[in-house]
Image (tube, rainbow, N blue to C red; front, side):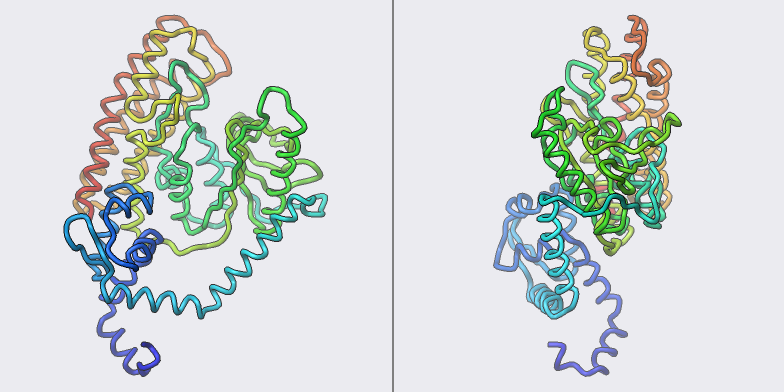
Length: 459
């Protein structure tokens, strides 16, 4: 179609209709909305089918569909079914045609080919270098929630203007409360099944995140086997290749304890790292590739390439939707309780099962939850200010106040159980801790309600 337009026609149309054109482009400037256009290109699709295909929440899907309908790209037929409009098909055809003819696609094909060779080389022995270091090293941000600390450190090394509050808020991690059933296990803050959603939130800062993991613990049992050593050696080669290929730090799970940490290079058979040890002012000595402590999985997170940053209003809406999803307990695995109910489970263990109260686990989960509340308060305050003239501003502010009450109570809990690998657990301490947790729960519930309200009235 564009071949029949003169430069004068193009210029005149753009200058006269730039607002409409910008609105149309914003409507498709999101991966999920492009996916929806592709799903309805062959004909009518039901809401339930789109929900399953996209993996979105009902609220998020309705919001994306609404934007496409408002832009005239999709039309609603009867209740619960949708199809592509002529304008939608025309725009999609133009977009795909331009992409196929562009150098962007060719570069993407070459990049995938190069990566396939790199993966093959991993198994065959890896990068033939004794050492390698990133020029601009990343530093672990002092924080209890190690994913937030490690990701924040890498993003800052990539000159992204953000802090740990931003990462905790946009990833949704600030709103997670997760505890093991029947005992106070330190695995709670990381025993989650929403990592794809967390990584997706992390990408709002303008970098695509590629998590490669093997869902088997290292080591599988207490004793390291030959099979374990082969797996972790291949993992080492994967990380080494990623460092050389991207020339950027890599985040991995299990250094130097079951936490996320940053790899800035390698020397011989060891990772050069920046880790959780900064919290206790310990030196960050290199960590041998086979000295990982990685329950649940071996994982490496690569920052692959820069990507466009979403419109701030849309980005914030998706963050609040993600926050509500995390806050309501969507991340619970078998054997764990998440969301507001987690506080009652936690309190019941302190009161009724003192033999299952591990001091380290109890104090560590307490420190992480307390920090998460602090991140949530500051993140929502910033957002409430940014949206103060819109309907969502008020419920965002209310949610921040509820989380502030929860944070203050969790600070009391941390004072009762300061972090340590072990400590005394007299009955009066356990009873006091349980009482505090039960006071936190209603504030968590009220905050969740306000997050949902903010999504409902979002403009």
